[in-house]
Amino acid sequence: MIGAIIADIAAGTFEKDKNLFFSKLICDDVKLSPLGECLQTNGFLLVKNPQIAKEEFERIVKHSYFEKSEANALMYVISIAWVYDTIDEIEEIGTIVCQLNDKADWYAWHFLAKLIFALRTGSPKKRAAQVEHIGTFRSFTKDNHWKCDSGLLGTLVRAWMAFYDSFDYGSALHNAMKLPGDRHLNAILVGALADAMYGCGLYLIKKKYGESSYLNIEKFVDKDIIESCRTKRTFFPKNNACTNVERHLWVDVQTPYDNKEISEELRRRILKAFTTSWDDRFGFYLDDGWIYIYRSYCLLYRFRLDKHKDYRWVMRNFQRSGEKPDISLTPIENAIYSVEHRWYLISGEKAPKNLEYCKYYHGEPEMPEQIKGNKPISNFWHGEMMFVTQHLDMDSWKQYAVTTLENLEGEKHRKFLSYSEEQRAIIVYIETLFGKWCPYDNLEWIFEY
Image (cartoon, rainbow, N blue to C red; front, side, top):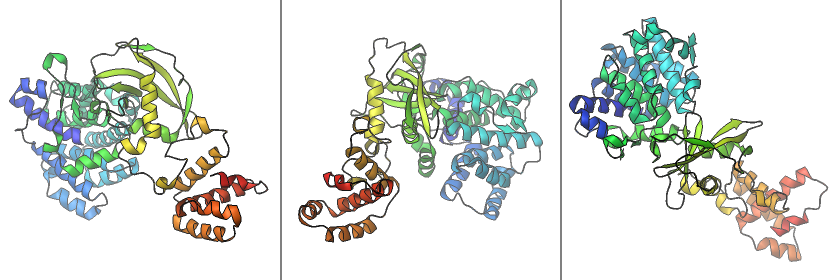
């Protein structure tokens, strides 16, 4: 949604000063077009109240730009595709809003919603093109009739082709300016698709046009829309990473991470990633099925994550950037270390409740290799992990620990008393947890905590 609004400003910049468009993409003294205003107004409405009642939405639609231009229906679709979290929700609310008489227009809004949703949840371009409404969207793009059609579906097909031939947000908008028809509608549709895949935090400009620059999105886009879209993202996008997008030479390379299985949680962290800093210099971003490892303005490695089994994934197809032939494996090691061990420092996510009381578990997505098989440490790590991730009630286990303390004598009583109330609660939980698994085992090891 953010990229669609910025694209509208970019179209206005192109109309005002083409050189400024190519060098900066947007300028500060261009205002939103009526289409852009419609998108921002209704995007803000949905962000503030996603559960808005059918009757209220219909009342607002009746008094909006919607009646003046069927193209405004697509403005609603862009915001709907970003606000809701499932394709069923998107289709339900979209059906209320986009009551179009023309069959092709009806197809257009269905396809646009599904394309944006697929892209913003990480689908590569080819997979996204397989979204269906009666037929696949790909089948429509292959039909030359729609490439020439002046209706909404024809406009969307051409916008998709401009996006498909792009390699980042800026290049997509360069392509959009070449399309026939309403320049602002073209730009908004291309910008919406490009933002869903690439993001729009940075204008990664070709060297012949000047220097790359951050886009001043806060000037044009409501802060609630910005926060909502950032929250909805499931991956770190290409245009939010400082990389040289003009070079794409890759060489296959063997690494210790080939065919390494990782958990669903570690995959989530790798995809969502983080903004690089002095302490965490190497980051990840997702682009068209590949996960790239980069440092500012320099691509280093890329690889794929394939589904394996039982919520597990496999790291495969590692390639090294051809512009860095002598690079070591340090970027891979450091980037993975950041998401494994520094996640709550770098991600902005709030640490789980009770994590601060743990002695062995520090929020890792899975048990560290160095403690696997090292009992009782591995048991302590697993028990603390279960206590935190299962959101157990600390106060209840504190009470249980009080009773346990009363029943202990001598050295065991003194040892147990040396821990804090919270640690005693976790220790009692660990003993209970492993007692269920091994009821005839001697659980004396618990006092080694």
